[in-house]
Amino acid sequence: MENASEMPLTQMRKSVEKLGSSTEKYGDPTLMRFLIARSMDTGKAAKMFVQWQKWRASFVPNGLISDSEVPDELVAKKIYLQGLSREGYPLLIVKASMHYPSKDQPQFKKFVVHLLDKTIASTIKGREVGNEKLMIILDLQQIGYKNVDARGFITGFQFLQAYYPERLHKLYILNMPRFFASVWRIVSRCLEKATLEKIMIVTNDKEMEVLVREVGEETLPEEYGGRAELVAIQDVTLAFPRLEG
Image 1 (cartoon, rainbow, N blue to C red):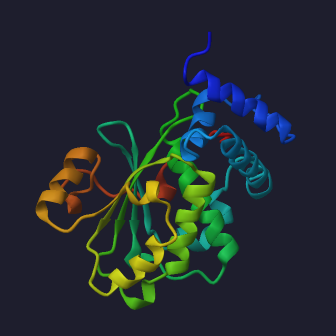
Image 2 (image 1 turned 30 degrees about the vertical axis):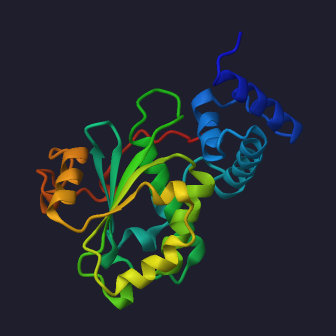
């Protein structure tokens, strides 16, 4: 007799087949992320999964986006990959003051996939890709008007929501200047409720203490109250797997 989680999984697999696709290569953890993202509606989850498969096949045909495909984005050294938090989530740090709106949107979109894939891959050690989640710190320290990129933020979040369902554990926004509040209002309107609930705008010492406690001092860089050094994402070497889920 199937348990409560196996029933919707079985139904979703059947729904995917009816849509002309297959779940053969994918384990239950991968499918469960799509089910959760669609409130356990097997039909909607199947549709989202098939759309994701088609997108992945066309956008990431080799299973990964290499450094050589996103040179303009990497040269700014604005993204850092710090290792695992106390609960085992990889920590990605974005320094917005080093970012400028991209003149090459196709490359920027590839860069979003590159950094998300590499962050997820950093948690995988010979096991199936499935329900790995990630933590993000978005640092707005010293951000100026020239760094503001609402389109870029929205693209990043849209990719997370459409193609990386249930991957985000928590996003911390640090050092938000007053002028950025109006930009954030625009961005936040494009976010699903489930995504917004995972975002914490840190505004005081008590909230910063929560961040330090959840991440852990051994992973958090010194400038945020930890003991680690910043590690640029391109300096992190992985046995990079082909991501199927």
